[in-house]
Length: 390
Image (cartoon, rainbow, N blue to C red; front, top):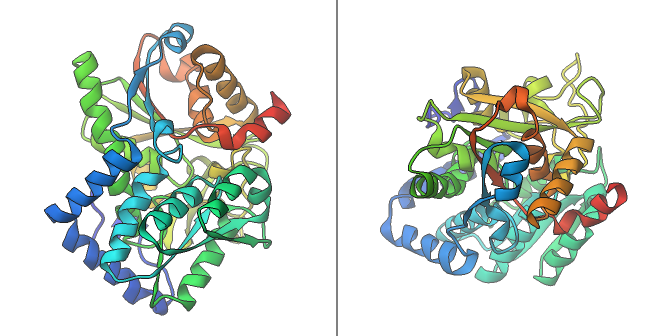
């Protein structure tokens, strides 16, 4: 269940659906990763930066006021307290160390909410590498603070004005760039999707979240939780916290997608709930598409969830019955954000706010449960959007 096949498939999902130009680069990446993943020197270097630069381990915080309101015992895995304000830095650090091992001199990335772009710009500044970030024009407007942060650290921002002008189109342009400059460029994909071996790499670099959370909950409660909850866009924070609980069948794994304006509308981003198998950005996964197989536009108030696909491992976990998935509307996500701010003094990212909103649903969660929720990022970047509605 945990590892992909040699062809990069998790069950029926995954693979390496890319032009021949990129096959050698992907094979080199996998070879490099397999060489260093158990190398004490590589592990020590990554651990050093995760601890002294990022600030890990992140706390597992018992949210007393939220727990009383929801009639559960709720622990928040505080990835918002990481340097750069989200979980994305865990993966970008791992990948840029791989890029150095492969002798690459230039980094490219895609970003929606801007947090992966900020994390990429951060590690490029740290390691002295050229950095080019592709971002949809709509996301540049609604995430202007993160654009300024990336620019301040020396990254070049490329505005994408095609299609929906959001994450899907930014990813497409980044892949085009990579094909042209593949010899000296490494593409740091920000989520657990794309062609093999990216879903494997991103999940493994992010699994530090669940590794810590499992140890922390056992230290604090001497038992495992009833459920682990995370928002789902592409899947990096979700798989990061789920991975070390997959074998614990007593623990429910619950993913929360973006229902946007409603699952019955054409304005949502619920790929697990409403998608069909299809190839998008190098892998076979569950994709929002019409009857002719054309990719549909996704919609979410959260830029980080505004994507019409989802990573292959999450598709497999859902199909196998290990993962439960639900969808939360824009309106309910905003309510979840406001409630956490008022009860706990924590402003969560709109991505995380979708997961927070599920806590009020007694039909799904029951009552008096012990729950770990991955607070994947802080809401500074979303304040302009939030202030328009709240």
